[in-house]
Structure formats: C-alpha cells, structure tokens
Image (cartoon, rainbow, N blue to C red):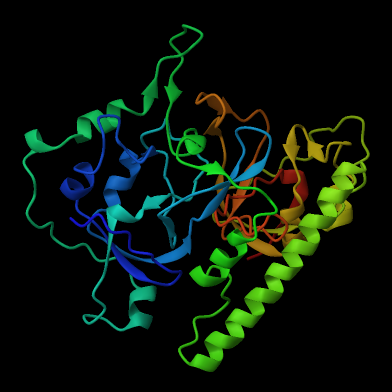
Length: 349
C-alpha cells in the first residue's frame, strides 16, 4: 500500500480499504498518526462512498472552544459513528478518515448519479494479511477503546476520535488565511458539482464571497469579545433559571416544527441555555422549519473525560439538522444539534 496521500476533494468517490490493509497501518493502540481507528468503522471496509468534505480543520470542544488543524483526513457522506462499541453513545459523530485508509474508486462500473443514490457496494478484500503479521488486531482494537479511570473507580472511560481529537490535531489561529484557501480548493464550499469550466469558476467566486463574509463576521466577533460586546448573531436569553416545560415524548419518525427564535429565546437563561443545554447561533437557521425526529439522545460520551453522561432531560436529534458552521469558520464536522422538546412542536406528517 502506497504511503502517498490522496489529496481527496469534496465529491470524490472512494473505497474504504480492507480490514487487513487498515489494521496493518495502525499501532498497538489502534491509531495512525495519533488518530484512532474505532471498531465502529470496520463495518465500512470494502464499501464505496463519496467524500463529503475534507476534514482540514475541526472544532475543539474539549478545551476552550477553538478550531484545530487536521491533516490528510476527510469525512464521508452519511458515515457517522453508531456508538455500538462505546456503550451505545447516541452522539452520532461524523467519522474522521485518514486518507491512508482509503483509495480512489473506479467509476466505470456505475454512472455517477447512480453511485450517489444506491447503497454502498461491498467488494472482496484482496491479499489478506495473516493475523499474526498485523501490528494491530481486531481484538486489540476493541481493547483500546477503554482507559483506566484516573480516579480509581470501575466506571468505564472510553477513548474515541472525539476524546482524542487534540492528539491528532494542532492549533489553528483564526487569522490564518490559509484555512480559507484550503476551503475553496477542497470544494468544501461548493453548493453544486458543476462539470463545465464556467460552473466551476462560478463556484469558486461564490466560495470567495463566503470566505469574505466569514472573515467579516469572525473579525467583528473578535472585536466584540475584546470590548465585551454582543456577538453576531445575537442570542439574548434573559431568565435567571429555566423550567422543564411540556414533554412531548417524541419518538423517531415523528414530524416536528422548530419554534420561532422569539419563542425559543423566552426559554433561555442568561447563558443562552435551557436546563444546561446551549441554544447555539448555528441553530437559528432551522427556526420555523419542519423535520423528522431521528432519535432521542439518552447518553453520550463526554469528550473531556471519556465517561458516559446520562441526559437528565429529554434531548432530540432531527434528521439532517447538523451544524453548518455559518458562524464558526466553515468547520466541516457537522455535529448534530441537540433540541429540547420545549423548542419543538409536534405536527402532522
């Protein structure tokens, strides 16, 4: 297997390498260049996907919020962690894929439009390596997800890409303009994938406009942060404390409408939270929209500690409703937004 990076772009068609090929790239802790390969990723080996976006940067929620630089990695369309090996974590994080775990796929067997619409196709592994020759085995991969609890208790402490994010990333300063050049070159800012030169030129121009907008917003918010002013867009919760509100007991598959901005603001405290759950500026774009409930969030792995956190109040994820990073410098991580039921209303399908 070649060590050359693929320099993949948004929209490229790839094939995930076989289990044996990927395991041979990992150290004894199941990592490549400090990036964990998680057991949940094995199910995708030998299958084909489109690159959703290059993962050249990502948000860091472990320490004071910031963006971090990632190298040689991509996100694949629709490929999220199901949490099966991590205590059934409900976070549904988008998975990071090191380019060495992928290879370009031959598109001759199927038209591009068909590839996008059908389920990924499994392909047989070639030249499997004997288990004893691998630097990491599936057994070791499953063992590596657990960490000893620093406090000495028997509470499971999990290791995943989210908890180890700072290990395989580096500092990315907000004023580093190279990040925006990478956003344009990678195709991360494209709205469509035009084939003609004129369409691609238009997409580049639109990307430059988006970058200019992001720079203006980021600079404004940095100045406001320095002078203790309000951020853009402004969310002004005013309650001293928040209440539970009506429980809808929503279930997957039901349709809901997100309440208006003013209705949601009336439920937030001065930190823009409702019972500890933040209503973020990235969620504003969904106000008034109707969506299907994807699932209820009962527990998630805490990125800071690796311990499982149980949700004290109902928390909902909606289909297709993830962070678009309109105000966070185009982070491609697309973390699901968590919704309080009081921010939603049930509607007929």
